[in-house]
Length: 262
Image 1 (cartoon, one colour):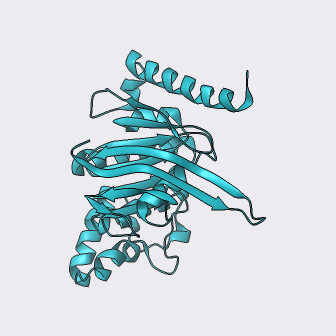
Image 2: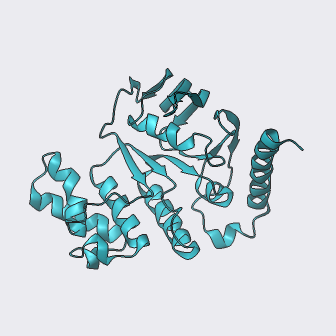
Image 3: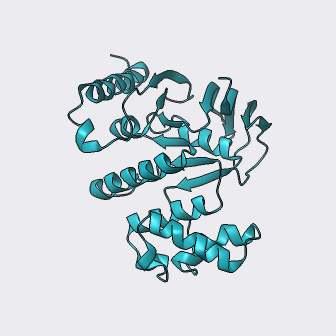
């Protein structure tokens, strides 16, 4: 893909277990992500999708192959890639607004400008009135909103999201999916999103990369040609949306059958 912002080439990752055995987690993965594209990685538990995301983030070193981000080889984490993980990863001793201010202040922004910037982002994720609360005083969904705002605060070109809504109840998950799409429609950042939810992948994505069981390989890449902006209530009645869900469910079912046999 000529305009790729992320280019994953022949990527392999092998771990050595505590008892000395070799575990091949990812094998010869090739994926290209265009600038401004929303791409989901979908697959069963243990297929290496999170490991793949961590390698793009620079947190895990590939065994072979390479990852290029904006044409440069990934050798470690960088401010161009913003991770949003399921664990929220907020500083418990800082208030909500202090958490969001942290990145810009570390980048050299004045505290006054950082606070104004953080207030705008908290308004965007509908948490401005909770600016002086501490993380322990918030619900899980609210903490995840803070985590998204904190990542957006230092303006990464790419969002790396590892099942960020997986630990939330169904209603909160739907609300945050909608908010994420609103943010994406506004800024059109590149998003690489790991999920095991077929409906979530179809609702959010431009393309879905389906992984096999370990060792994780790319089984299929499905283009999601649905109109944007998207509203779940409209898509639920959309036949094309339903067909994408069925197609991906069948692909995931095939992954299970390939491992266990008929």
